[in-house]
Image (cartoon, rainbow, N blue to C red; front, side, top):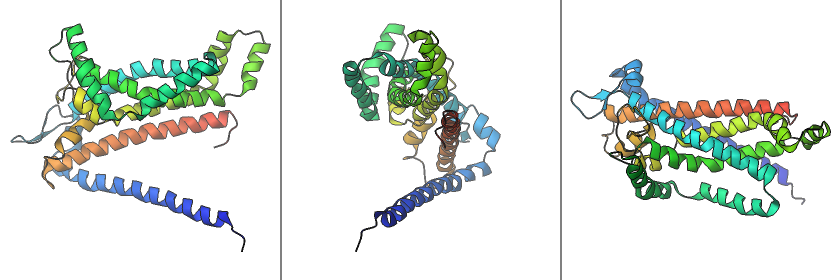
Length: 294
């Protein structure tokens, strides 16, 4: 009897895809089921725009604006570091580095992606935070700047790898046509290659942002843990992910505090989902632009 692998493989992969969809829907259902009850106590605008997060006080306050701003400060700082380093690394590896140098640098960048986040957290807490505290003469080294630097390093492999893939997808004919018209290497890179890969590079940046926004353990260790509205990168902050990780174990199941943490998770999920949808739209338009299909 002849073995027909297609008849077996298609149902298997179809079942795995369906299981992934069911799993995603289950996550969304739980977040809504456990998060929405908090809005019986506090309305949506007070929850999002409230300036005080004291979930165990009497009376309790459930304003997550400091947590949202803490997340945004860290994300902004991380991307200010990550974008030039990640995109610059991708351009260097793709356009400048020779085969031997690329074979050394590429694995090093990929190794950064495999280091556990708690190791980054220890490094930031023991090395970076004291260094910045002494250098900048600030009361505490665990602040938004420290978290931004560490998360920026963590996001570099994501941005670099995806940006390099985007550069690889640019047809060689673009480069050859540019050289044929008399452009030099720098002009070809800045006026032809980068614009052609622009959508893919944008996707890399957005997915790098998603990586930063969703990080938990590192920011829990190096961000300072202060649920206050930050005024600068030197202030300690507490992002949304760190709040959930730090307080979920202490929250009584079914309490307003418990439901508020799930509501924070819901907000975080919607933010990261929006990032991924935007990245997918940009990536699809990029593939269509280059005639690669959907």
